[in-house]
Image (cartoon, rainbow, N blue to C red; front, side, top):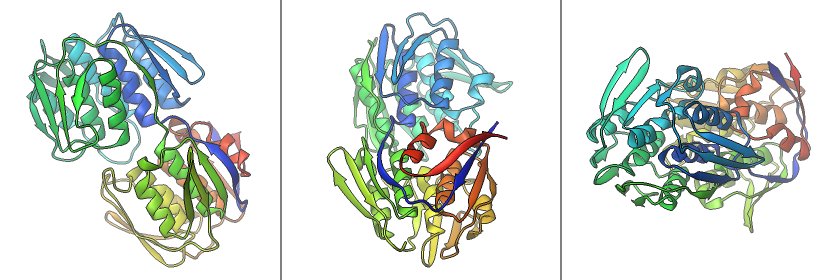
Length: 417
C-alpha cells in the first residue's frame, strides 16, 4: 500500500489540463450494455473506478478494448446477467448495470453496492422506480434479483434527488414499452451527458438538465461515438489548489458553465477567477476571506467539493459555516484536518471552521475520495511535511493528480508504507 508525502509551502503556477469526468464516464460506459455493436468513447480518464466498471462489463460478457484515453465496448453477446459482489462491493456506481441489464435481457442479478463510507446512499428509489415500471424485485443473500418480460412506461417521482437513480431509470426506460416521466430528477451535467449519449444511440429523451425528464421507449438502440465531458470536480479541486497556495493556475479543458456555484464561492473568498477560451485562469490573493457554504443538488454547491472547500477555509480569516445537506457522514475528513491543527467543530450536519491557525504537517489518513483531495490541498499549504496514508482512494477519481501537481510546482512523492 502506498502513502503520499507532501512538502508544504510551495506556490503553484502553470497550466493543468482537466481529464474526462469519472461521474460521466461510468454511466456512459454502462450504457453500452443496451445495444450490440461497437461503442467508442473518447477522453475516458485512467482511473481505478473506470477500470472496475470495465472489468464488470467484461464479466458480463462484453468486449472492452482500451487505447490511451479511447475505450471501445461491444456488448454484442452478453453471457451473464449477474454483477458479482467481488466487483460491486468496491464501487457504488456498479449498481448502474441494473437498469440496462433488466431492459435488454429482462433479468438482472446485482449485488448490493459498496464504495466510499460517506453515508447510506440507499438504492430504494432505484428499486421503487423499476417496480413501478413492472419489474418483479426481490432481495436475497445480499443480491437484488429483478425480472420483467418488458418494462412499461410509468410516471416516477423521486422523493429526494438522486443522480444514480435518475441515470439507472433513464437507461431502463429507453427500451420500455411506452413513455416514462422522471420527476424531481437530477440535473447534473453528467446526467445530461448520459441522455445525449442515449439519444445518439437512438433513444428519445427530452428534458435532461431539468427536474422533469421524459423518455419515450424504443424497440432497439444502436452504438454511439462519444467524447466524455471534462471533470468539473477535478477542475474545482485545482481552483482550490490555486487559492490555498496563493498560486496562479490556468485550468485548461474545463467547462465553466458546469461550475458556476464553485466559481462564485471561490471568487467570494478573494480569489480572481477569469473565464478564458478553453478554460479558467485562477489567481490566489494575499488573504482568504471566510465564506459560508451549504451543499445542495446541482446547480448548487456540490457535495463533492465540500471537503476541498473546508481545507481552504482552514486558512481563511474568520469563521466559516459549512453545512452538508446531501450525505449524513461526509465530515470524516475533519478529524484528520484537526490532526494538522485545524480548528473545526461539528454540530450535526454543520461544521464551523475557524481559520487563521497555521496548519502543520502530520501523519493523516484518507477515508474517501474527496477527503483524500482535501488532505492533499491542506498539506500543500501547511508548514512542514504531511504523510497521507490510504492514498488509493485518490486514484478512484483523480487521473495523475500527483504528476499534475508536481508540474505546477508542488513537491510530493509516493512511497510504499
